[in-house]
Amino acid sequence: MTFATADLCDRFADRENFQIAEPLFRQFGNRRLFSGRITTLKVFEDNTLVRSTLEEKGNGRVLVIDGGGSRRCALLGDTLAQLALENGWQGIVVYGCIRGAALIDQLPLGVMALNTHPLRSRKHDHGERDLMITFAGVNFKKDHYLYADSDGIIVSETKLD
Image 1 (cartoon, helix red, strand yellow):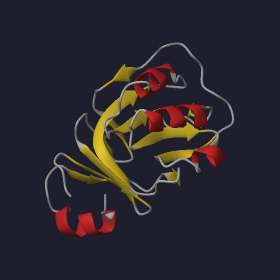
Image 2 (cartoon, rainbow, N blue to C red):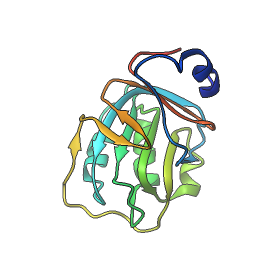
Image 3 (cartoon, rainbow, N blue to C red):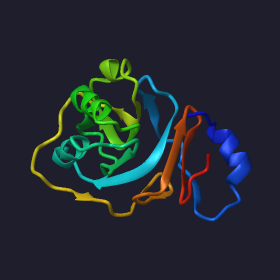
């Protein structure tokens, strides 16, 4: 996998269904470049659905989690990041917080999140999957393509590389 989001912008930014996320995210994980088809989750301070989704085979996909931008707890930690890696997920984008960042930084997994928070989330089994979610000025849809690197996040309806 070789691409640069800056190069993709230079080549494709004038296309319809090409979106660039606002620069809100910090990069975590040891894979600084990741891409794949999107699976979406919408949760709020509850990571039950995050766990059950990451228990599935990722097949090179990217999990995009709309956590409502909450900075009151973490939706992903090092245990779930390891689970994602073992099940073949390429990366995870969290519109919310993570924890265990030092351990996540050692894993060959791409992770982008707003920030870190030491408190784990609640477990109430609330959330929705595979619907369009919107944050950072982007509509994330199931099976669209996400590209991320140190310059940012791009979403496209079609594969770009």
